[in-house]
Amino acid sequence: MRITVDALIKAPVEVVWDAYTNPKEIVHWNFASDDWCCPSSTVDLRVGGRFSSRMEAKDGSMGFDFAGTYTKVEPNQLLEYQFGDRVAEIGFNSEEGGVRVVVSFDPETENPIEMQQMGWQAILNNFAAHVSKK
Image (cartoon, rainbow, N blue to C red; front, side, top):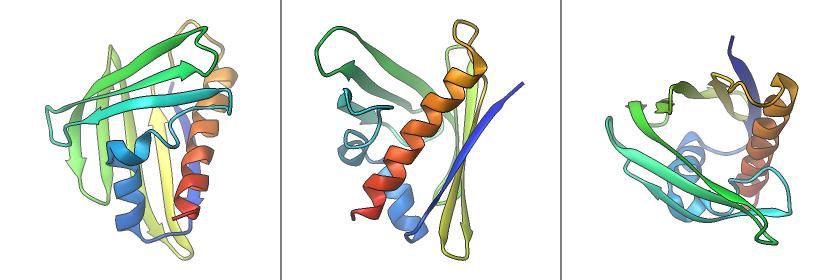
């Protein structure tokens, strides 16, 4: 089973791609709620390259590194990566009105599917809001 979330971003695909893959941009949107933050991010955007984003509660009570390895990079179109034993795919699909970003990923087994879907959708919604300010 895979979980899929999506959002329509009203911006050119080059702007959307850069905001999704640029560590200087990622720190502004890569968290699910306002009480969390992303203080650091690194990206080696190539097949075999690694990425890592630090996600932390603003009160310092918890945090984790979300990291993986890119398995496919098609600029302005598609990203695929492996994180642990799971896989994610992000499509950047141009359509009238902007770019539909579609994120599909293998769920983990510790949390309910609905919770995972809501969390990833919240992050994608933050991404959309960030890009709309550009």
